[in-house]
Amino acid sequence: AWVAEQRLTPDDEQRVRFVLDQLVAALAPSNLPLHPAALKRAETTEGASAVQGLRQWADDVLHHRAMPTQIRPEAFRVGEDLACKPGAVVYRHPLFELLQYDSLTPTVHRRPLLMVPPQINKYYIFDLQPGNSLFRYLLEQGFQVFCLSWRNPDSALREAGLEQYVQATLQGVEVVRSITRSASVGLISACAGGLTALAAMGRLAMEGSRAVAHHSLLVTAPLAGNGSVLESLAERETLLASAAWSAQRGTMDGADLARVFAWLRPDDLVWNYWVNNYLMGRQPPALDVLYWDNDSTRLPAALHRDFIDMVDRRVFERPGALRLAGQPIDFRRLRVDGYFVGGRDDYLMPWRGVYRAARHFPGRHSFVLSTSGHVQSILRPPRLGRTEHFVGTALPENADDWLDGAQRCDGSWWPHWSGWLAQRSGPRRRAPERAGSAAYPALCRAPGEYVLER
Image 1 (cartoon, rainbow, N blue to C red):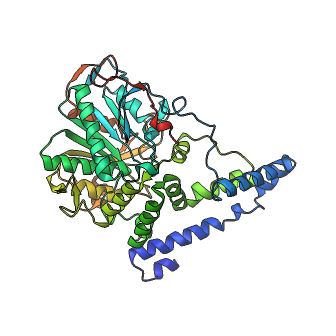
Image 2 (cartoon, rainbow, N blue to C red; image 1 turned 135 degrees about the horizontal axis):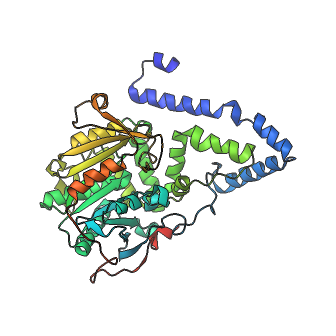
Image 3 (cartoon, rainbow, N blue to C red; image 1 turned 135 degrees about the vertical axis):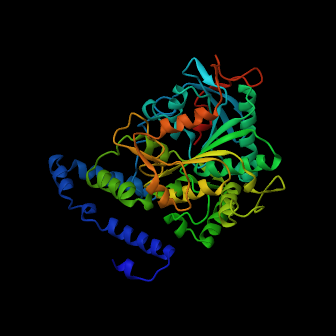
């Protein structure tokens, strides 16, 4: 109530609310050692839970910058428990491995799909376990699925910037086209991968190429002023200081960014584990999403700088502000159909910002509003109960007007998306018997080598 009475700008109000949220979350009585359940557990275990909690706290202070551990390192193994969909590496580049997944249907759509994942996280958020694997679902619907698995760079790749990552993405597109003998591909991207995919499509548009037929952009708000708390906190001086810091080290560590994200949801991602790990003396639960979230990667300093520059210069809104291979990019030249997905409770990429992007870029677009937060908005398999999504046939100027007129649908948005993809992926043909081709033979089985790099 006090904040509401102040005459603050929207950004300042978000900053003040953020600070107050941290104080309220930190001062909750449940965080104190006198937590009744913690005292009861200490009594039941004859003090063993308290001793274990102190040990875990000391370990986190020494090795995790005093942040409560969210995962057990031995809970999962990539390639066995996670990222276990059969496939093969069919191309290896200094910046990525290209994965082709084994078909699950006798026939497949002619036009393939290529996933461009974020560079700051590993790709297997889209292939966690069989029950929530986005890739498995697409394969069951008869799509040919490929994915870029980005390398986890060290300081030797410090000069790899947006130019190099766009060129790598386009190289992946060309390899997929060659293997499948398709004139074009459909792209899927999310977060930082979405920025890279849009930049790549902008370059193709300037060249008059139609190598990309359609694009699915998941929980990504690429335009400035998207309304996120993170954007209100990250002023220009802060961003430039961050770029200077990564330039000194050669990379930006994704673990640092993960810590920032954790404080955007302190109850769920900080104090919940404070109580569980320290007061109750328990091990963190085995959650596949959190295991992936903690398996972060690094960004080359040049790419980190270029991402900040894209935000600072508003390259998607100012024609010619972005230059690739010496050519100014005008995103008004894009003519690619898009499927945009926002998350109703997304604190990183607010859905209204995603909706703005659907209206901003030229093309025939569909916008779908999923439920839950940033990552969980994507992971909505049809088997999941008590979920819903919203779809609409028009894109009015105001996002709330769209929501008022949208149709509420029970269940996952994946089947709706699959129907949209099927209309744009061409007729079916016999599924390939093996991964790769004569020009691009399989090099090793999925998940490949780059995803295992630390």
